[in-house]
Image (cartoon, rainbow, N blue to C red; front, side, top):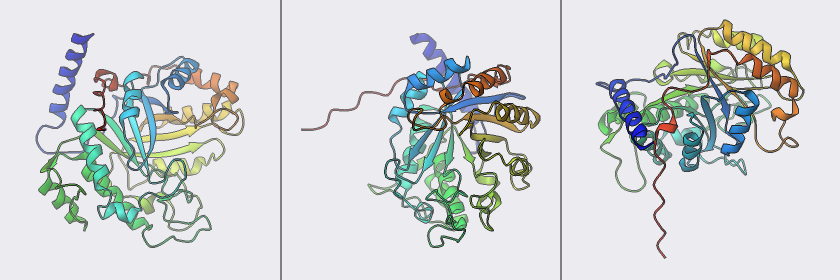
Length: 362
């Protein structure tokens, strides 16, 4: 096992060296055609991942973890390792218990959250951990703290405009990707009118290592609510800052016209498409599964498909597949085809566990 890990680590090092040779560039981590990375959302335990894999008779290649701003990655890292998955990390600005806003889009854009962004860059770069970073998903859903629109359709304004959202997204991409000297990152930020990198304790590092991450931008395919200024294009940060265009699609809101319109969006033309969340909710609906899988197969830019299983037990979680036996059976049958990948070639299982935490001083 030891030598197997050494060989895997050596191969990965060679791959990463090739990926990042020379000038820093975006990394898409798209699987070979016509493959689609099959994934599932993270419910917080390896056991729950294994139960989902067993119900599907297929191991998911991706595990999408939802974290509030500033959260430690240590526990998630061990789950990614134990499940042999490649991470998808969704970053929220709301406390996952109280839903209180932790940081505004304007504050992120202006550098008040740089400590966390530097932490993310260091974590993924230091370990050579290939991952998809999904910051502030569903910005056009009014219930999200980072949305620019209230649920009555009015604009929030202040620190919650689409302009601030786009600037926040650009700053996240620039710092988390890294691959430049500090001077280079600051020049990139200055280009778009943003202040330099800051750190609360001591000066920032003199250079930011290249992290092997891919940046996923993921609004809803329409708007919630559907009002002027709250459609996907209003939140588009620009092709330079986005590696994948993603969206979410659920059986209880089956707006197929919106999904098709999103797929053909001119602003993200040519970007690989991810269904960063999709699920059946509210009733057993195998027909929706058949439609969604058929849609995926017919749209070759769709290269990632992550099933959302929600949180908690079936009594409190409308996304729990145990509620929907016909849906479960249909999904299991539809993803049997080998083009739905059950392993990403380089995943967290090749990496060592984290070292034990240093004992706290008395």
